[in-house]
Length: 456
Ligand code: SAH
Image: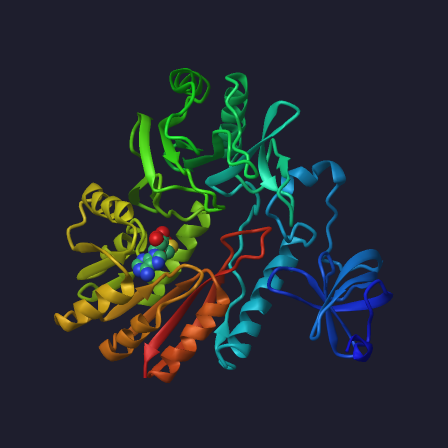
């Protein structure tokens, strides 16, 4: 069968890249047969080696670039360890924003069959580095010392990282310091192979507006070794620390966090502000990782909601109530729903903290709770959804179509499921007016979008 393919494994060919995949690899076509090559950029010509051929597509390795894109930037060997998670490190920021816009347009057309939707230029950052307020890094051992950083692509080897270029300096410092302290105290890193050792991950989260730091230590064991010395050293060396949390994950799994938490020291939450709204954030709750761009995203969601004061709003997938409370300031009443109980506790606390009395929160699946509200006579004028990567459940979309809110604002971290869900809503009577991508994750392939839909 492979005889019919235009290339064979181990062939060296001169290729021209015409596109990028959703995970940032260059696409070169040989007689219509696509070959995906990490590192290749549209407009570039390169010598590549074919390393794998499947029936419909193949993979290649970049051997030599023959003609360069003006979007290409160089990353030195020396700095490579700082770029963990930066799949677009070889593309200038201008190029990244163009790539993201074109990804959104392509997916809306291909999956959503939405040819005429206006996709605005991506709202990017002025300084697209050191933005993440949170990191959770795997811990391992090398030459008797602890290492922490990121997994080398397609391997289980941890690249020890002293500074990540996409994390806030305070987050880098926290991870670094905790790693050193654990090393000094002889704490053993967890070993995936043998399922032995203790420390699996170190997580740090920082409230950029308040300067409050939380560290979460994730261990296999219920007992945290050297607990008292750990606390003593951490509080002495990390003056911004407000909370130390112990999370226990005793399973053989690559899921990072377990369900059980103990507050080891300080508060159960840290605080942060988005705009003028104050938020309490606990260890297990979702909180957007790019605080500056979160404001941009929520402002856009608020603009698309177009509230005048009396509306009833539903915020599905509300997390700790961030969007809900943003909207509550301009709405009659807001109902938020979220699956993680701790997040809803935070949401209620956040409403009280900001003296917002017109927001109500419920724990549960959006696709179960909102149909129930609908049965009980709740009717929303505006409905906001902000689902995880897999998008909205069909039962929820069905209820939206029956409830007929005048406007739907769809916040999405995955253009593919956004496109799929927009198609269902279009077929159910909605028109997508515009889509605004916001760059929440510079240097990575991730794209966040807000879409505005109106009932026809
Ligand atoms: N709007 C929030 C959270 C968005 S992240 C913010 O901007 O901060 C998506 C949230 O959906 C997470 O908090 C996750 O716990 C929650 N979630 C996942 N599946 C859900 C479901 N089926 N029903 C309700 N919430 C869900």
